[in-house]
Image (cartoon, rainbow, N blue to C red; front, top):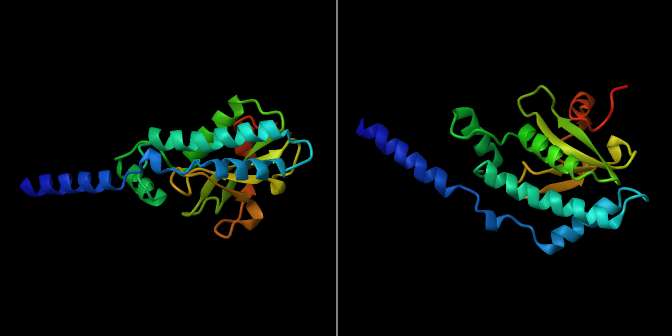
Length: 182
């Protein structure tokens, strides 16, 4: 009995020691400006003010989700805690669903949101939001991935991602109402 109690206390101390402190998540003005520029570069029709608002929402909501999920870094460790029953949410698809729902509510006119997936159906499957200029192709989009860096937003062109090869999951995009079924 004492041994179980010591293990539980040790685990609790270890888990608390690994928790992500909200103030450490990087939302510096340079990141906001850089993401804004990358969003404007998606197409001629992108409104720079809307790009800045999109960047701000993405960066700050990623941080907010980290708090809601009681995030533990790194992301794969947090996944382990979910699978063991110590955390309720925070798998990559949940980050993506929550981020997409939040961004949809903003009703951006310059952008369309798509669902990206890498290694679909495999143990290393990863899901994320992809933002494209209104009417743009999935391949031209910018990956918006709050899971990868444990709440510190990762973004980049999909073809530049050396970790994952992304494809659109049109079924998920239709289900979430970001594209219409044809």
